[in-house]
Amino acid sequence: MNSYNNVIKAPVITEKTADLGQKNIVVFKVDINANKTQIKQAVEKIFGVEVEKVNTINVKPKKRRVGRYVGKTNRVKKAIVKLKEGSSIELN
Image (cartoon, rainbow, N blue to C red; front, side):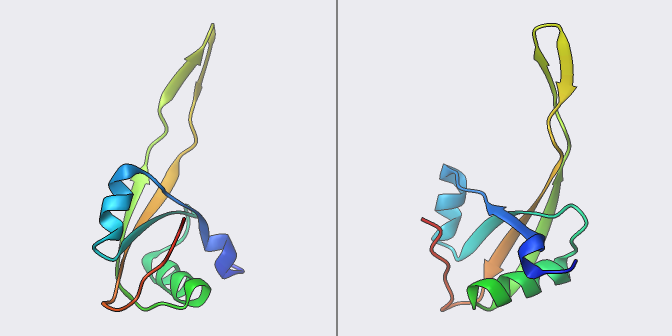
């Protein structure tokens, strides 16, 4: 990874992740090749917080059909980042 901005793509904002936000947990879409250490360093540098733990999920592509054309969605890697107590990120 060349830059920390290339590691983190976007936050995942859903009702479920909003509930996790109250427990100091934030969810991001990250680069597929990023590992947990790179994700931790990127979150700490970009947002200026301390990270306690990082869990990752590889989301496989799903088949989609539009008329007679069949394709797949993009594969995504999600990072569930638990922040240390006293740290918080506002993603509104």
